[in-house]
Length: 81
Figure 1 (cartoon, rainbow, N blue to C red):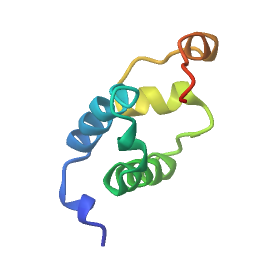
Figure 2: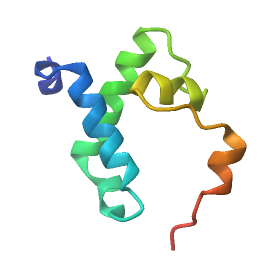
Figure 3: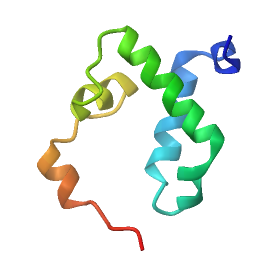
């Protein structure tokens, strides 16, 4: 059993959305075991509900956010140095 199973799915999605929104300000989160485990856990739950994780809009909607078209997503992408 995963320790994250003890938490409400809505709470996990909220925490993920907030952390993900601030990744560029706190790039060390990308290497955080917690963030990696949270993302993997949520992706597994989404996959089990039929979400195509390759479709970023489906993932965004499942997480409770607004879908962002790929052309918009790419426009605002920054390169890490």
